[in-house]
Image (cartoon, rainbow, N blue to C red; front, side, top):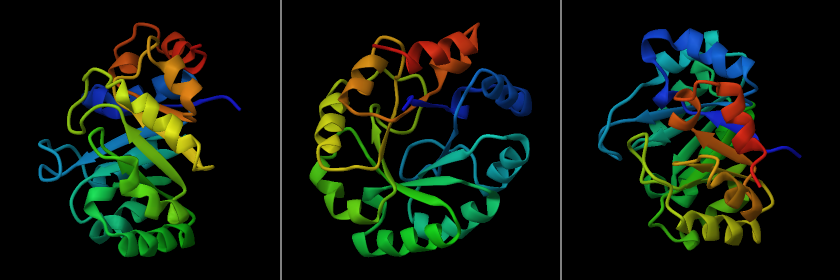
Length: 214
């Protein structure tokens, strides 16, 4: 099965998001990665559920909404109602019991819930979450800002995770044509990429380079 590509709108031109979305959709994007940051869990503030609702109106492809926020359970219903198809929360922000409850809520609404692992966090941190999760997002940069360099340690983490988890594995951060092949070979199913895609003169070619990287 072909690797899915999820352009991250954090690197898009926010003055013309509808056109930016069409640009990546027409270029073959499979998902639209949406980074939600609260200025607490990460040192940056981006967007909230009202913007996700507007993105839902503009996008034909699924919205992959990454909640880099404290207390994500409190906001889960808001992001479901806004039209998120896939919602990711960080293991540091929810207990195993709360995550299991959130997973039930998301699945009842026809959504998918995933758990994310920061670069410094060991895989053991999320093992108890795996029975309840639809996918795992491995961060290959420290969350909070676009344009960071890929952290190579993510490759071993993906490979180890692939050995114990049969669901989808997504990798987010610093993805380009130089590292994509190694990530795919390790077992990744979804690549989230921001500046490499939105900063390209030929977006379709950029997407194909990372999708087909060896």
